[in-house]
Image (cartoon, rainbow, N blue to C red; front, side, top):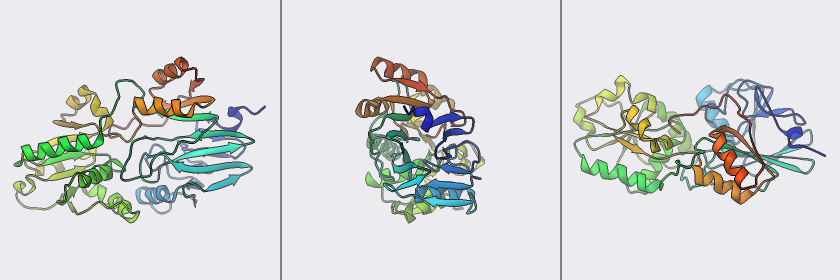
Length: 337
C-alpha cells in the first residue's frame, strides 16, 4: 500500500518527491525544482531546472536575472507534466501573480502542496481553486484565531478617508514589493482613486511586469521628483517596508506612515514600527480561510509546512482530521505579508 511519504517527504533541502526526483520550493539549489510562487523564501536561484507558471518564471527573471536557473520549464495553469510516472498540475493559489498549488498524483494518490495562499478575491491574481485530495499540505502563517482579516475595500476606504482628513500631508504606504504593492494600487483604482500614485524605484520593474501580464495599474509616477516637499501633499506614495525608515522617506511632507500587512492586526507590531495608520491587508489566508479550506476539502491527512502549526494542528484534531506539522525551515515570516 502506498503511503504519502512515498510520494512526498520532508528533507533538509525542502519537500522532496522520490519517485519523480524533484523538490517543491526547495530552500537550496537542486537539480529540479517546482516553484509555487515568486517570493524569495519559495523561489530561489541556482536550480538546474525551474518548473513554474510562466508568470512566476518571469518574476524570478526580474528578481534574479535571466540566468537564474540552468533551464526554465513553464507550465501554465491546468496543464500537467509527467516526470517518471508522477503527474504534476499547477492550479491557482490566489497568493500573488502566478502563484500556484502543485497537485501531485502517483499511483492513485493525490497530494496538493498549496504553497502560500488566500481565499478572498484579489484583482491582481487568479482566485484559489480547491482540489480534492488525499493529503493537503498547507501553510499556517496566520494560523491563530486572532487573525481574522477585515474586508479589503474597507481598509482602502480608511486610507482614503485619512487622505481627505489630512490634505496637507502625504500618505506613505509600506507594501511588500511583490504582490502587496500592486494589490494596493489596484484596490485604490477600484475605490475611485484615479490620480497618479507615486512609487519607490524598487517597485518599478515588478509594476511593469504586472502590467505586461494584464494587471492595469493606472497612472504611476516615480517618488523621486525634486522640488519642494509640499509637492507631495495630499498624495499617496507606495514603497517597500524597508524604505519607510530610510533617508529616502524624509523628503516627504509630514507623512502619515501606513503599513499594509496582515501583521497589523497585532497592535504591538504597529506601535513598534511607528505606524500611524495600520492597514490590515494580507496575501495569506487568515484563520477562517485556513480552517474553512480544510473543512471544504476534508482530505485524508493535513500536513502543515510553516507558520502557527500548533493551533491549526489542534483544530484538525478537534475536527477529526489527521494532521502533522512538518516544521520545514527556510520559509520566512515576512513582515509585509
